[in-house]
Each structure stands twice: as C-alpha cells, then as structure tokens.
Length: 153
Image (cartoon, rainbow, N blue to C red; front, side, top):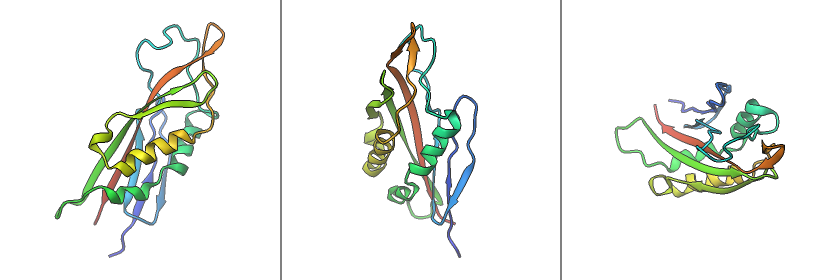
C-alpha cells in the first residue's frame, strides 16, 4: 500500500484559509489561530503588525518553511492511525518589524524537534510591517500554533 503525506497549510488568519499542498510522506502540519493580539499590548493601536503581502503571503511562508517530515518524531502507539502535536508559540513583532522573544509555551508537552522547528521558522521570517500607535511603530505581541499530524493507513 502506497503511503502518502499531505502537507496542508490551513491558516486561519483574519478569516482567510490558505490552499493545501501535498508532499510524498505521512505527515501533515497546519497552523491555526495565527496573529492573534494578546490583550492590552499597544492598547490604542492605529494598525496591527502585518506580514508583507498579507495573510496569504504569511500562509505561503509557513507552507514553504515548516518541515512537515518532523511529524515522524511524534510517538505513535500500536494500533493508532493518527497522532498530533501542536506547538503554541508566542512572539513579539518589534517596532522595526523583526520577530523577537519567541517562546513555545508548551515545549514540555511536544517533541523537542517540533519546538526547535517552530522557533526556527519564526526566527527566519522576513521582517513584518510593524504595528502603528500614534503614528509611530510599536512592538506587537502575537501567537501562532503549528500542528504536526503523523498518520498511517
């Protein structure tokens, strides 16, 4: 039986869903709840931080840079057809647009390679358009989840 892996970027960003991609292995990754403001940071923002090109470009960046094959590190008990692990990442988009202060808040509950991958992908992100407050760029707190799904037929 031929195994296939689907690399699906399901990015819900301000109500937008990205298209799915396929690859020749058994792992899927997806993102959910990206770019959600954490309450009371930059309270009177005139504009939120945005990835250059918008939501579709962010979805494409994640789709092209998250290594779905790392899902193979998720332990799969005998008789189980699918397992998942999700990295919950918080980070700041600094006033210059760079991503800083990246933390996987549940690193103790997922495989270390998935934690490393989530940090790597965000760390290597191109600069963002920073949030604006009172006409000046300001730091913006965001969060991103990345889920790896490993399965067999």
